[in-house]
Image 1: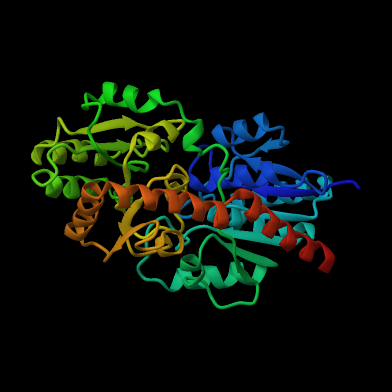
Image 2: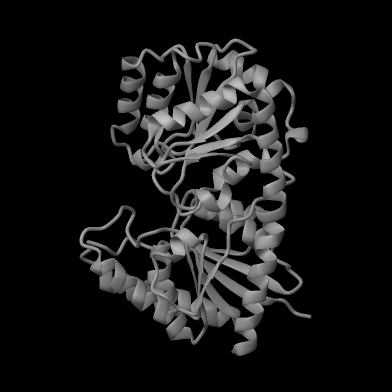
Amino acid sequence: MTPRPILYVDHANNLGGAEQSLLLLMTFLDHSRWQPHLIAPPGKLAEEAARADIPVRTLDLPRLRGSSRSLLDWWQVSSSISKTARNLNAALIHSNTVRATAYAALAARLSSRPLVWHMRDFWLSEAEPAPKWPDRLGKFILSRMAALVLTNSHAVARHLPNSAKHSVLHNGIDLSRFDPARVAAGNRASICSAAGFPPDAPIVGMVGRARPWKGQHTFLQMAGELAASAPDCRFLVVGGDPFQVNDNYEASLKALCTQLGLDDRVHWTGQLADVRPALAAMDIFVHPGAPEPFGLVNTEAMAMSKPVVSFSHGALPEIVTHNETGLLVAPSDTTALAASVLRLLRDRVLCQSMGRAGRQRVDSRFRIEHTVAQLEIHYQDLVGRG
């Protein structure tokens, strides 16, 4: 059987959570049935896809909002995507980001291909818009143009207009890569050495690129509240600025750390290509940010047998089972966040049992193989309909 081509479209030149999820989908797809092709700008995403033997066509997808060239760019790029879809005889077009969908929706119409819109954010813009009516209108139009709308969580689905076209497809991870048994025992020692931590110090950590909504400032405030009650505890902050926003947020975090008297207890790793050693070194994983559309790193931490402490908002209640795989607290309650971490620090048996339960939950609910199997059912339904 000749595999059917699927044309994926993404606007990013770097690797965020959406791009990592897309790479996994394309890699684990049954290539005897479906042949993935990718359109993306030159950069890390295109390079990683090519490394995985996925055919790539590099194409810039310029920002449309606020651009004097928006209509011209929209038409020219969409026409180029449409031409590629026709040349490949693609069975469908699968757009992975909001900006990509703006182009792919028109390309799908021009090429008479069904569009799968993979919505991975709450809003069409990066931040919550005010007023919200343009966001609602844009979602309505894109939903009408798509043959299928996939969301990575029920939390995201609740921000879209009601439609029978919508389906929730939770992000999956490659569980074999996030396996505590495969991570070298020396990782914790090397991280403690680099950070200047005592080798037996309990470590509480977080992972996220340095943006305000990821909550590094909240993590530091929580650490400040824990300083007196858990004097042996150390804190690991993993993440940098891979998209080179270059604002002053990282500098403000360092200033806050000094202000709280935590300089000798907090270690900043910067952006890491591989977060597994850092996750393995942690005893407790904290997700202190704003509501997440999904929050892939939480499943990665759970796969590494780490209990997750988080605010109970966004998609986190879909991932973390309270009192079983971690602890969820009321949104914005930093004191409750600190108290939950302290509870686990003082009860090592509970901490470890929650970690084991977390890995079991990922195994049963968030494996990439399960995600891809569901996706292929959707593809077959669309191709059959066509």
